[in-house]
Length: 93
Image 1 (cartoon, rainbow, N blue to C red):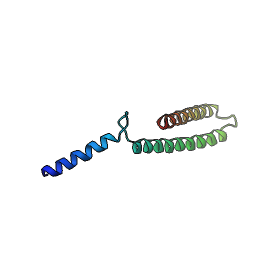
Image 2: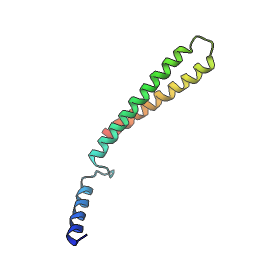
Image 3: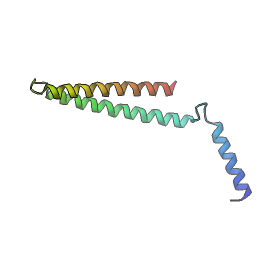
Image 4: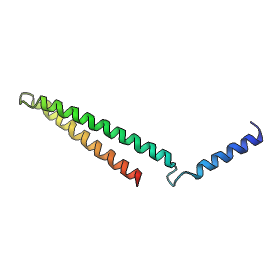
């Protein structure tokens, strides 16, 4: 690498650093993180829907143990979805 190449590279590095916010991430990174969190939220909501359908199939009274476990899973998935939604809003703020 020549001296000119190093200087150009150093200049590019400092320009990238200037575009970063106080948290060290650029706007593009935050946007990508929000998109990924939103996708995860959607996936968890879809899983919760599937678990709910399965819970309904076992709600005939013969497998209360299975129903209880599935209801616990539904609650955990709902809580995870809510927490991810909060994270998305926090990143946006």
